[in-house]
Image 1 (spheres, rainbow, N blue to C red):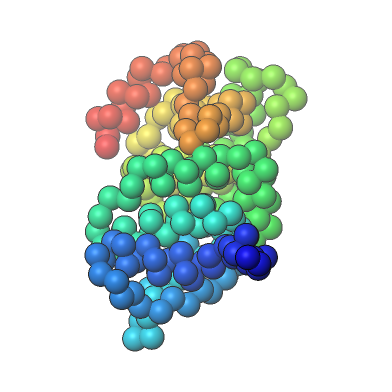
Image 2: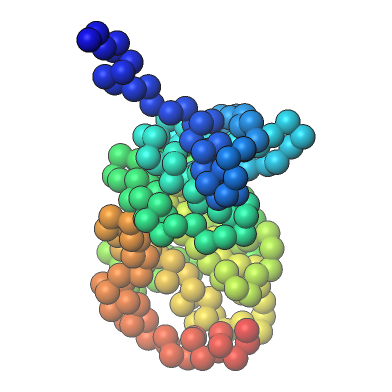
Length: 239
């Protein structure tokens, strides 16, 4: 009996075939729409789905389109489950996160974000508070003098929910312009800025599919801020 090479090593499913098979499984019927794959220079990793008259349009980033077949299948289960308003299988979610948490994938994704996206903010000088000045004071009080200074800026939108964030890809701290008001005490603005500065000193820890944003070391050092309780109490009452 003679075997062909393709029988010994069956061809790997294409992304289109994976998404079509997963769609049929979730729809619980043998027929599934034709799938068209579009690879786009996205920064985000999740991708997008769209049902059209011609079938199912799948848009993936270059990073995910080149991922191993099992990762693309995990993404198919996640995206198509959302399309059907169902919870995706936990083991596929875990597999997807484990892949993204690999050191080499994190580095590649970070490089793509830095190269392809811009960090929009309104600069450090606000109507009331100067973030450059506050940063220098906090660095002198709580950090090493050689701590690298990030870009600093106020957000373009007033947000009471997201008061600040540190963007590692752009080495930038942005605070919500909602804090840049006369009625907001300086110790509150300082606390939010101090919190984001701690993210520079204590980066996110990755353990398989889990990310620890606020580590034990982070929380311990956060308690060093002198007016921590007053700042948290003020924010709780104001929001």
